[in-house]
Structures are given as C-alpha cells and as structure tokens.
Length: 168
Image (cartoon, rainbow, N blue to C red):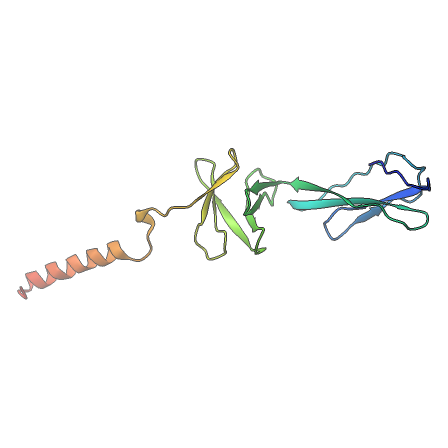
C-alpha cells in the first residue's frame, strides 16, 4: 500500500486482519509515498475483511481500504459460504450470511454439497463448487419421512390378517 499525505508528513500503516486477535501497526513512521508490505497467516478457515489505513504523525488518518480474503472457503452465491475447517480439501460447514447460522454440509458422490441454509436439519440447497451455483434441493419421494410407505405396508398386513381370521 502506498499513501500520500497532503502536508508531506511521515506516515505509518495499520492492518486490521479481521480475526479478532491481531492488528499490525508499523513500529515506525515512513516517508511520504513509501510502499508498505505486511504479511499474516490466518489459522481458522473463513472469510475475512482486511482493512488497511495510514496515520500521520499528527494522528490524522486516511480512508480505510478493504480487501476480502477467503481462507479455505468458497462463496455460495448471495446466501453464504462453505469452509474447509480441517484442511482436508472437503468443505465441512456452511455459514449463512444473513442469519449467521452455521450448519454442517454433506458431500455427495457427484462432488456437490447439500446445504441446510436455515438450521432446521433439512437440506435446502445443492451447491456445485465448479459452477459456484446453488440450486434448490428437491427431496426424492423415497426420502420422505412421513411414514407413508410403512403405513401402507402395515395396512395391507392388517387386512390380510383380518381376512385370514374370517372377518371379511
């Protein structure tokens, strides 16, 4: 980052890494228009907004420059993002941008992910990391949990039993 101070004061840079643990401030003031470099390693997967600004020796501050950094994570268009929490190359958690809810995800054989967007323990989206596109999840009839197939089977068994006992 290069910052230009209007009255040519020396300046120092402040880097906010957005992980609630570290803000880096240069130990010394640099000459005006001096390039500043800083590096940092995040330890937790997620989406971070790096903020950088400059301050002169009179404590005047520049505008804040922001840059979004994705650490072991991928955006799921407009609804949130997935993170690979253990670094194994498979996404583990979905973070809802609107509600802040975090839920587990399921990797399917076709390399897409099932996402529970609202924390109700039901899948809401299928996400394809190749296209970056989530689509609404459509539950297969075989996956219904209302017990209908079992109820029909039970009813048939009861009818056969009653028939054999002569009630029909």
